[in-house]
Amino acid sequence: MFVTKSNAVLNVGISELDNQCNSDENKPSGSGTYKAMVADGTNRIACTSANCATGSTSEHIDWVLKPNKEYRRADGTTVIGKTSVNGIFESDLTNEVSTVINGTNFAITGLNANWTNSSNDCSNFSTTGANVAFGSHIEKTIASIIAFGNTTCSNSRKLYCVEQ
Image 1 (cartoon, rainbow, N blue to C red):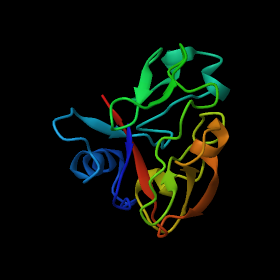
Image 2 (cartoon, rainbow, N blue to C red):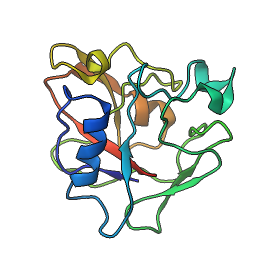
Image 3 (cartoon, rainbow, N blue to C red):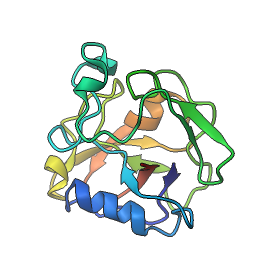
Image 4 (tube, rainbow, N blue to C red):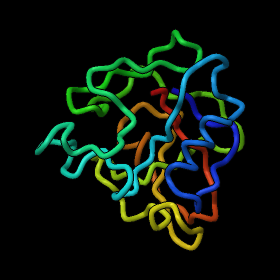
């Protein structure tokens, strides 16, 4: 898992956000395919109920985190955290996703603090004329890493990228 060096272009849809992860300078060399850890409530959903309490992984649509998996930083050794059976981080992270700050310490998510889709998702990542939820990659608490605040979609941030 890594944070992009470049700011994301947000009005391009989910698949293009994934492409941005795969072409970013911070992508570990020789590694696999990555997807952006963002949700838009239509094409990519983490949970439809708070923390996937109602349906577990059946609530996912094209979700990027896998159940019961340990995620590490791009260095391959630093543990970020382990997901639950619901395919989300349910407790605070072991380490920050990244401590390196290149311009901003924020990454867009389109998520609420309970892993449900935020209404702030750049209108399904199709416009810069709306708002987007973002998290802070230098934090360890779940609420801070996925729902630190909201900003306009024209005020671009980084992406969290998760190896598939």
